[in-house]
Image (cartoon, rainbow, N blue to C red; front, side, top):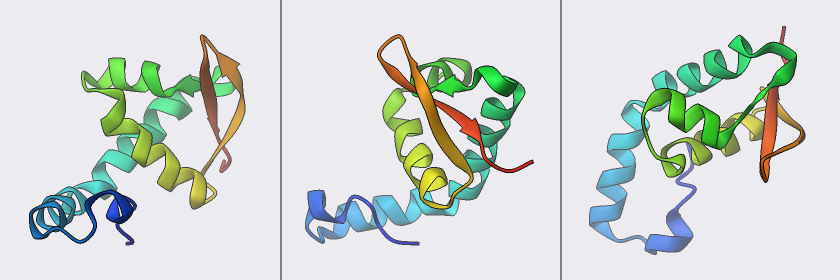
Length: 91
């Protein structure tokens, strides 16, 4: 998987090691995000709602949303409280 933060850290070894550690758990977090969106059905979820539900910051979720959207697993269907609303694109 590509390092979506590479432009920010410019190849710094510490940053590279950190992102490699994150990618080791990425699949689990993606599954959690998908399950949280799916549980809401047609109402969808915002990044803020997902982060609140999982007790983490929005920065921990926004990258997963970007990846899942790029994979075609989720889509933006509107806005709520100033945030994009995501829904599952797969059955």
